[in-house]
Structure formats: structure tokens, C-alpha cells
Image (cartoon, rainbow, N blue to C red):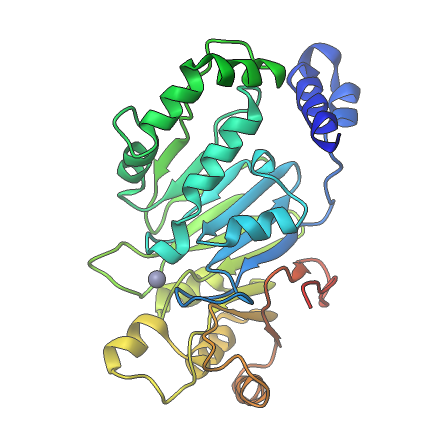
Length: 330
Ligand SMILES: [Zn+2]
């Protein structure tokens, strides 16, 4: 029943131009006036039921943006009350699997449920995200046979038409733009500036993103150790969402620290950038326990004068105002 209602809403939305703006407004779910951030996945590649791998959701005006979509992040998207069809843009900081493994699920569920009535997903990320997209969804791609079956088999066409689609069905074809540090992506009332993250170069190009919205700014570090470029990117942001992988001093090697940073490094980055709130994510089980958590927050607060938030899956924050809007997931 809920699904029927949902499909009806989509159908109405696709004809909104002909019906005028009031019909469009009635057909679309209401959007928050202030930018809303939901932490979808605050974990690492390590298996965890409490923390899914990296994924973040930003609702800005009429757009629903995900940044990274690691394994489990899509499940959290559903738990947050959204579906794949709601997502308009996807940004990837880098192509470590814990940041992009649910890309396939996002695109295929969006394609299936969208029934050719929503625009293709806008995708941004470092190379080789175009090649990854082709290898997943192209005719010779991993999902090529599935996609062909769903386009051509009568039973699938029947379902597609029942959802309001008009055969022949189009293939899923995300609009992919490969981006690099220094690029700017202009959205409808928002922009994303691409910065450099210090992580596992030269094997993967690693990026950070700054989202400037009408009511403030948020920077997402991706995975990064200390980086002057990241400090510049995050300068003056209301919120900095930063990888906080492990406890300072326990890194197995200098290379590990350079690629992942630690909580003292993050305190320094947040203080230098002058952000108001630092949100700690990408948290290993090593530090995700009573007393260790408090010690980390306490030590960060000795060096950083803003607020520190211990990120949890499904936690929601806003940019406007200094406080957390609500906390869910406990
Ligand atoms: Zn990584």
C-alpha cells in the first residue's frame, strides 16, 4: 500500500511541468528548509553491526546528496526514511570499497523503482569512477545480464509498466563527472568544492568535499591524515565531518598515521580551520568504548575550541544553529 502511494507520487511528479508548480509541490515530499545532515555510516572496513561503512546524507533544498556509499550505508539510507529514488547526487571521495560498495545498490534500486520517471543520478568522484560505472552497469558490465533481463523479459516489463513506465525501458546510466581537487560543482542553491585528502596516494586519488549551502557550510574529509589542503578547504565551516580512525600513539607505522590521522591530528585540523563543530566518524571498535571515547573527546577539546561530536550511525545534525537537532539510532 505504501509502495502504491509512493509510485503515485512519482507519476504525479513527472507530469508536474504540465500541471504547474503547485501540483509539483503537492506531489513531492516536503523538504527541510535548513540543510540536514544524516550520518549513514560511521564505521570502517571492519565488520560491525553498530557502524556501517562510510556514508553521509545531505538534504539541501530539493536535492538529496550522498557522499560515499560504503557497504551498509544504503541500509541506513532506508532506515533514515529515504529510498534510492530520493537521491539526486552521489559524490565519492575515493574508491576504497568501504566508501563505494553500495553504489551498485543505489543505482540499481533507483533505476528499478524509478521506472524511467526520474532523472539519472548525478555522480562525482575521482577516476576511475567512470570506468567503475561502466564495469558495473554497462552492457558488458557485472550487472549487464541482469539489466538486459529486466529490460527484455516480459515479466519484468509488466512490473515496469505497472510502476507507470513506458517500454522500451532505458538502461541505468548515471551521469558521471570525474573531479579533482580544485573543481567546483554547482547545484541548485548549493555548491561542492573539491579538495585534497592525504590518504593512499598514488594508488587512489583521494578527495575531500566542502558543501556550501544557503544556511551554512560543511566539510567532509573523506579519509585523510593531516593535510594543509584540507585545512584550507574546511576554513570557517560550521561542521567538519572527519575520519577519526584510532587512538593517537597506537599507529603501527608513520605511513599509517599519515594516511589515517588520529584524534590529536584532527583536533589540530579543526582548530586551524576554525570550524565550529567537529564530528568524528570512521571509528574503529578499538576506540568505540566507554572511557576511551571520553578521553578522546577530552583530549581534542584541549586543542580545539569548538564542539566535538562523537558520530553514530543515523545521527542527524543541522548547519544552522550550534546544537544537534536530534540524535537517533540509540
Ligand atoms: Zn580509505
